[in-house]
Structure formats: structure tokens, C-alpha cells
Amino acid sequence: MYDLNQQVLRTDVSGMPLEWINYQDAVRLYHTEQVAYTCGSLLYIVHGGICALTGRQSIVEVNSIIATHGSNKSLHDTYVPPLNNRTLFKRDANLCLYCGERFSFSDLSRDHVTPISQGGNDVWNNVVTACKRCNNHKAGFTPEQAGMELLAIPFVPTHAEYVYLQGRKVLADQMAFLLAHFPRTSPLHKRLNTKKPYSYA
Image 1 (cartoon, rainbow, N blue to C red):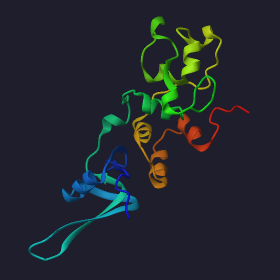
Image 2: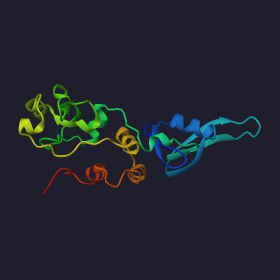
Image 3: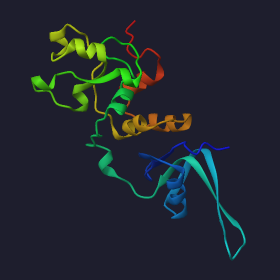
Image 4: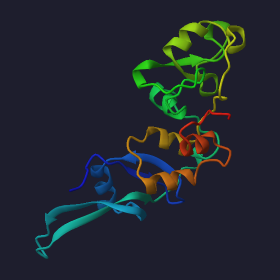
């Protein structure tokens, strides 16, 4: 039995990760012959209609990663992904970057390192995940002014990193594929490979 909620990773023909799609969109891409090649594990076997000429039923095998024709060079260099709390919290591994504890989504908040009231902007490299207690304590101050230590420097995700952050349930082969497209200096490498990504012991 297949999990029809499992997302498929779509890439361009060069292998650049583009987006997550559902199985219906994946089948549509196969049907319209936009799939250049596939990799990863077999996710679904979808049975279609019966051909009047041959009497055979169409079958589409959908892999976890599918590459489609064409490329999008604009995603390689200057791309800045949209900022939202779900992806921000996932970027920071659901950890408060002040106290270092892990929290559920509902107990987290977006903190502006340089507060808006002091000229800070609502952009990736000025926001971090903070528990509501730490955010309230920091108030309208910078970390230095509030006497608080910032455990990691905020960063702007690349497009490949952002695709990962948007994923709901990322399979091992999809994760390996995405990791290969992260910059070597990406903080996500450490955050994904340890349970205590901000431990300096």
C-alpha cells in the first residue's frame, strides 16, 4: 500500500532541486512526457485507463525524484526565498537560538536580532527562532543590549536548502540528493547530523 501523501522531489534537467509535488502532478508530468529521467526509490505504481486500440491498461511508475526538461538558472545565484515561520523554525531545527532548548511550533516565535524599532529588517539574516519566553525577555533590544548570547548566526537559505525546509516528510534518498546541493559551508549540514546542533562542548 502506497502513502499517497508522500511528496515527490522535482528537479530541472541539470539536477537542481525545484519543488515538492504530489503524485497527481508527478503522473501529469510523466503523461505529458516532461520527465527527462528519474532517480531514487519507487514511490507509486499508478494504474490508468485502458487503451481502446491495444486493450492494455496504462501504468505509470513514479520515483521519489524526477527530473524534468528545462532549467532555471535564476535559482542558482541571487535567489532569496520567501520568509515564513514554518521554514524559519525548521532552518533553526526548532531550537531557541538563545536558550538552546527545542520547542514545539506553537511555543516558538520569530525574533529580530536587530529589532525593527532599531532599524532592523524582517529578512532571513536578521531573524532567528526564539522561544516566547526568551523573545519576551529580549524585548526591543539587541542580544548584546539584553545580555543574551546568540547561539548561531542567521543565514539566507539557498534554493536547494529552502526546498528541504519546505518538505513535510523527506525520504532518505531525497535527503541525500538535497544535501549534495547544499553549500559545503551550510550550517544545515551540522544541524541535520547531530541532536545537539548548538552544543559547543
